Amino acid sequence: MATENPTSYSYMGRSFGDIVGDHSSSAFSDCNSDRSGEFPTTSSQSRRLLISCASDNSDELIRQFISDLESCSIDIQKQAAMELRLLAKNKQENRLKIAENGAVKPLISLISSSDLQLQEYGVTAILNLSLCDENKDLIASSGAIKPLIRALRMGTATARENSACALLRLSQIEDNKITIGRSGAVPYLVNLLENGGFRGKKDASTALFTLCSLKENKIRAIQSGIMKPLVELMADFGSGMVDKAAFVLNLLVSIPEGKTAVVEEGGIPVLVEIVEVGLQRQKEIAAVILLQICEDSTVYRTMVAREGAIPPLIALSQSGTTKAKQKAEALIDILRQPRSGNANNAYSRTTPDVAG
Image 1 (cartoon, helix red, strand yellow):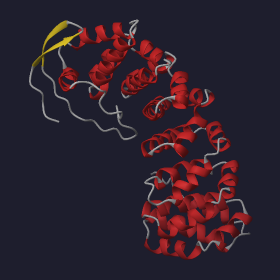
Image 2 (cartoon, rainbow, N blue to C red; image 1 turned 90 degrees about the vertical axis):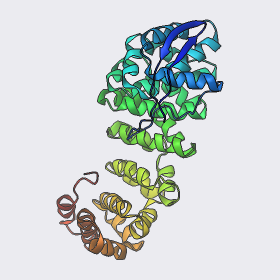
Image 3 (cartoon, rainbow, N blue to C red; image 1 turned 90 degrees about the horizontal axis):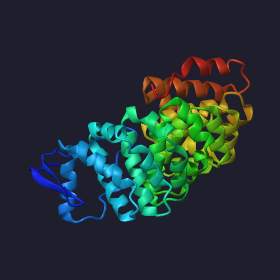
């Protein structure tokens, strides 16, 4: 985005002098900041807000906005939350300043508002602040997790998506994974995965992938019915979610409950189809999942073989990457010798970390 020219900035009748700013977009590997689009403002306000993102006077602005978060007027609270959300959108320095000046707790209070728009603004501002690693502990310790889960359960579509993404950011701290799981987030993330739009499904799957590194969260996800949406997303090659769903499933089948659930949900035919017609990366992860399913079960090996898995696995063993070839060969060995005591050894020898 082009650099803005200097201009005079006024807020609630107060002048803050000339502002020069450079508003540029930032990308994040796990989730993007501020995906809600622009708030409804006049064009001059929108321009002025974008300019303010890099203001030399941002300290005074921030203090005023934080004060206004606790106003008796919902309109003033909304305006202040909008300003802080934009200030935190792309500039790391502002995220630190906003948190250091005490914005986190009043923003968390907004997340509990009965006004759904105000709640959405609070969620989005907290999400943007959470993009700064130094803010994560403060946000969690200030009590954000339960209000974010409440917004995930009953907020607007944007609030639900951004709550999922904020919980993802907080879950990147190991201790928070336990708190988030035990506070009840998993069933609502599963619901978003099943019923949300594309962005909601993407955010939910990424958050679940992070949370399900813990066994107790894997069990919660399985008990919440995650297998149905995962299998459906993997079966739909046009969903744009095959890879994400498969990576979540790969975590879940590491426990017996996950293997049982995916078989009961009809996942074996879907996984075999992915090995046959999926993209190279999809074929590899599907082979890894099938290996885990077959590892200790003759019954499951028979089911996989009857679905016609061996021919596409042979093709993968001949044309895939080195990792894919190893996994395909290991699975072929297991399927051809279902009662062999060497099956487990073959599995452990030839299946390096799929994400490596």
